[in-house]
Amino acid sequence: MDPLTEWLLAGPPWVAYRTRLDLLAETEDTPEVMLARQAMLAHPQVRRLVDELADWPGSVLSSHKSAGHPIHKLTFLADLGLKVSDPGVEQIVERVLEHRADTGPFQVLMNISPHYGGRGQDEWAWALCDAPLLVYALVGFGLGDDPRVAAALEHLIGLVTGHGWPCAVSPELGKFRGPGRKDDPCPYANLVMLKTLALRPEWHNHPASHTGVETLLSLWERRSDSHPYMFYMGTDFCKLKAPLVWYDILHVTDVLTRFPWHAGDSRLQSMLEL
Image 1 (cartoon, rainbow, N blue to C red):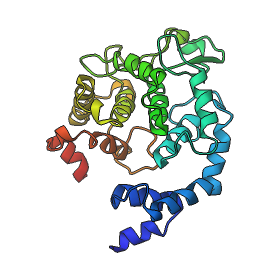
Image 2 (cartoon, rainbow, N blue to C red; image 1 turned 120 degrees about the vertical axis):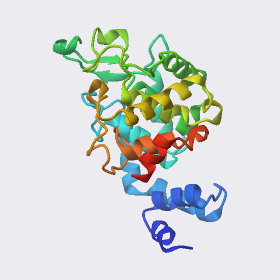
Image 3 (tube, rainbow, N blue to C red; image 1 turned 30 degrees about the vertical axis):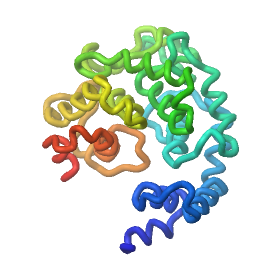
């Protein structure tokens, strides 16, 4: 075993667990994997995240960029590999499922100022920069075949245009949208939609997946002069950041490389080389 792998396996239990699954291709029923998973679930830091999310939705969503917001903690637990059958997760999932728009997407608690087109009050709503993440987490927790989750994803997929996913919000948010032209694709919405569609192989070749991938690659190709909704792909974009929360090169390449049909694309290769 190489020194890097040994170092990872000696890290926190969630690092050891993901290393065995993702890098060493061990299976869930391997004794070492089972031990790492048990240690992860019992670890105080993981337990603290689960306990925090038991009060979902927690704080009002005021910034999608804040790594401390519960929605990002939720997706982080899904990335670690927690399932609805694990202690405390079912309670969180039930609270997420309670708030669902008539059209399908799951909602979070928001407060959009009238200055930005909202009503200035706490209300349950969704936007294309948060609704896909709730579907992502629920699928990760093992609810991919739940009809409510499927309906939410179907509605979100249906919002795609020929230029990718735009800035779109639920009716409760009135005329609110991000700072950009109405017909522009929202880079972050495309990223989190693709992140969700990457979870299941049967979604990889969906026409919307092809459109979203081309959107992100085109934005990289035109990064010097195309900055829809004030998303830039410059110096700060190219800094490595973890966990994968916002719009940066590590998050984008992590998502794009999950769609194998464009592996040889020169635009993707340039991002990977960088």
